[in-house]
Image 1 (cartoon, rainbow, N blue to C red):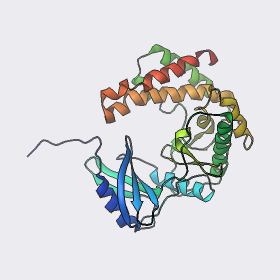
Image 2 (cartoon, rainbow, N blue to C red):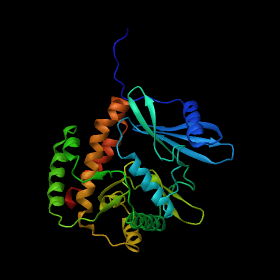
Image 3 (cartoon, one colour):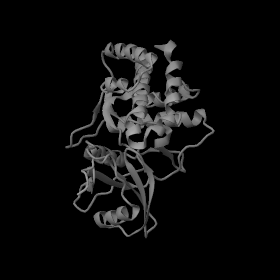
Image 4 (cartoon, one colour):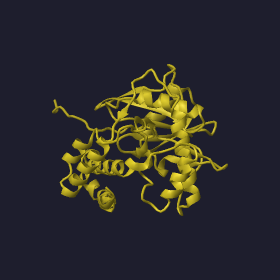
Length: 300
């Protein structure tokens, strides 16, 4: 008998996912392709009627997937997402897939329509992008779920991230950011997208901006969703677009941006390496995030 093996991550074959979606969703599946594989695996599933769906297989032990899918259904009803969940044969939005590393949750959603934004960027695009984020936050105000919510505070995983980072500058900036955030009396708390970048929006032919990919959505500081565009040339246009629908206090943006960068650096140096190997640390992400941190030193 061979030695017992602990699995970090397995990968389901596309034909198995095709059969799973056909069985659990009652769809006439004609094909399936693996689109992305990292923390979660995403497959594009084609059907006889021409419609396409996304099947996402989550890492074993992922929590709050049911809450996330309830949120996606709520946002689809509000018209702000292009990826509505598809119910399974038991009426739920979340199933379980046996894997060597344990049970992995899976979901099926409508494949997000529209086109991903591409350069060249413009103030007009960022104005629409900011307004779309405010629209998402407003729509999420009325969300409720029977499932426990994912909760994320800006500094909740900061210590864990810092353990994988040796650069003293990063530790110094993280400490300053923590003090700034601890001094905020009334942060704007609510449902946030969690990864509100242009990678997770699609543009519709009519000029709309629709969201997808909610696997980092959480109840937390909403200003964190604004940190991606911060400091860029189109930040003023983005902020103006957001403020056309919703007020925002930007005082905490820099501190939260620092925390988000530190957590991302820590992820690339630890969790990503566990999934992709040590070569992944040399892909340039860490260097780019460190450069972004250095650019913020005078603003803290």
